Length: 312
Image (cartoon, rainbow, N blue to C red; front, side, top):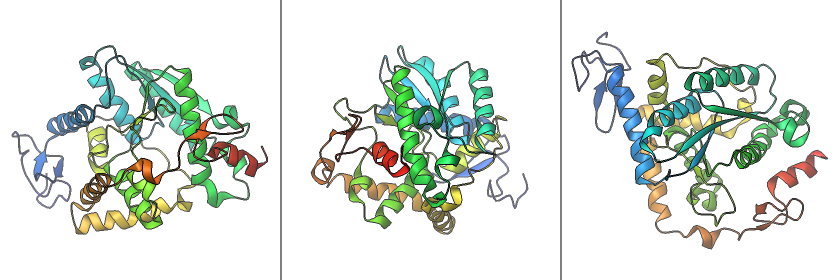
């Protein structure tokens, strides 16, 4: 490695062995070779699962698998950790939104990975769910892309997970994603979303969501896949440019580069707030949607409200 390498910080050896490093990681400051990076990422994901009791014996985990880097890393890690759990099974679920020039490539990547890992793979489309693909639904309302897509993706995942008999849905949200969400909810003044946890007990109303990669940065995940020749070089969703998250991501990345630890500090602040706020006291009680019967906080669930706005 060159002394000026920005990834490794100029170190010539891994902190744990004599091999050349591939990455420099903070907290604690260390340089890791490929083998020790892989072990570090997998051990930390396992620790997150263990400490938060995300996976229990006899669980069937539906992995939200887009084919991108985060979900690829998640599926690979869970596959490797699988033998340590009692009677736990995995199924990969890919949602085909119907985005021209983007989704076909990611679906092919997803099919290749699941075949290689020998994991059951299920695909569900927006057309199956609502009768049209996302491109058609967004004609004349492109700026609403992320909102529309998010609502329908969540519903599609739930439908497919229910059909697959899943007890948990695992998503590839990483530290960057989680910190971005904290900042977005803070900017919006949305306290209920800020303190809400996806894996909380919902009295059987929802399939709980778990995030095993929530303490691992995007940089680490990319390096983890790259050194194993599993990094998916795929196009970016064309609707990303309309997202508030894109602005927050750029801002937070700049802050993290200038002030390392910013993202972890945001997560520490969220956890500190959670200790002093009862989510049930600031959220609307669950009821049933009058149209479809799904649990929701109002008279209509988000999907039924979306259907009405789209004339479906």
